[in-house]
Amino acid sequence: MTAPGADGPVHPSGPSARREPDDRTGPTADRDPDRRALPDYPLTLRLAGRRVVVVGGGPVAERRVRGLLDARADVVLISPDVTTGLGTLARAGRLTWVARTYRTGDLAGAWLAHTATGSLLVDDQVAADADETRTWCVRTGDPAASAAWVPAVTRAGDVLVAVTAGGDPRRATRLRDGIATSLRTGRLPVRRQRPGTGSVALVGGGPGDPGLLTLRGRALLAEAEVVVVDRLAPRAVLAELDPDVLVIDVGKAPGHHAVPQDGINALLVEHARAGRRVVRLKGGDPYVFGRGSEEIAVLRDAGIPVEVVAGVSSAVAVPAAAGIPVTHRGLSRGFSVITGHEDLHTLPPTEQHTIVLLMGVGRLGETCRSLMAGGRAPHTPVAVVEDGYGPGQRVTTGTLASIATRTAEVGVRSPAVTVIGDVVRLAPAWAQQNPPSPAPVPDPDTPAPAPERNPT
Ligand SMILES: C[S@@+](CC[C@H](N)C(=O)[O-])C[C@H]1O[C@@H](n2cnc3c(N)ncnc32)[C@H](O)[C@@H]1O
Image (tube, rainbow, N blue to C red):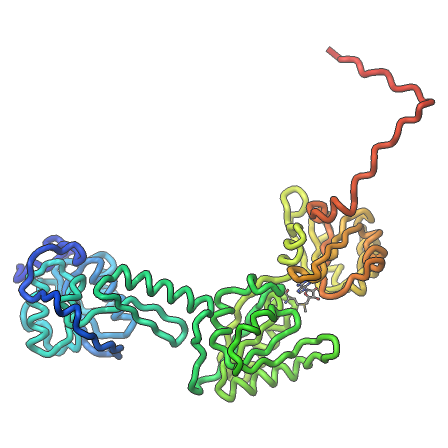
């Protein structure tokens, strides 16, 4: 993009006269290989409201400008022509575009200069002028001759990691990417060591297998100072927490009473108000029969910053663990998730609709009777999947007419997800437990039927 009325060239600094900085091959007056060996002094800058002059208008300059605008710098861009993206930013008033080539004096008032023209002559001039005015100057693509340079950066929450790698930007980028992955997966010790603002993250932990916990959930656990955990959450991840993380178990287990919801709400508020980062680790998804919205409402009322991290719900994952898709072309066009027979009237009155029942295994017989009374065929397949993804995973299948007897015979226990509908036929357990009835044996006294005539 070329600005109308741009001044004539002083130095050839526009994209037309420019190679992108990484392509440069020519000589330079100020290039000293020994400077690479000198120790650097790392520093981060607060640039908000401070002037930064960027010389050059190509893609490298655009990347730099975007980073500087993120830091709220007052950006002055000097180049006769610029990329479409830079032009858009200029028209939006996000920066000041001086549409001409660089001139000595352009760095007046700048705290930092950035030159990315692709012309060694111009870059040398900008760097020399910057030295003159004691302004730090980044010469993109030439770390040996640069007074300052931009590291490869990754951020995780309030943690910022900056990497330089001996003047090799690709090496720095790859290293940065490795660190970013470790940060995202919660493998680095990012937990705060100084008190700060308290917050609560409601993390859906999935149906119990740590592999089904999201990366965001893991990253928040790595930052947590307090973890308030449910019985059906992926408890194996607790062993990976630092010993000084406070773990509060609010789930009901044999010999251990569940903390009532009011008590859980009070705990979350108390620890967040004390300035701690709290993770509320729940089973499945926080908003699927997980009382997540109630906890959020209490926290918002208390003015506490909250985040909700969706989780893999047992409503779809536990059937999947048993080989049952909740929808399947030709068998089921949708599914409903309910918790008991009192919700049956809410279901669409169609056979091609899967019913997923959470909780309520104790009332399964009652639920099946209600469904049959409501018109569902007694031979409708049913599967009960206990302890999905756990060591005790077991699948019991039957029909609306038979499942209550079968589950009583084998002693089905909570947690379990019940699936009702033709999709159950796709489960390997259905084929094993419900083999097709053998073909009737022909009666030797009955004469065999005459072979069918070929109609042609
Ligand atoms: C209070 S609900 C919470 C559901 C959760 N928010 C979700 O999205 O999965 C608890 C019910 O989820 C089901 N459930 C959760 N995890 C399970 C698992 N690993 N195996 C079988 N059922 C499970 C059971 O029906 C259990 O009674």
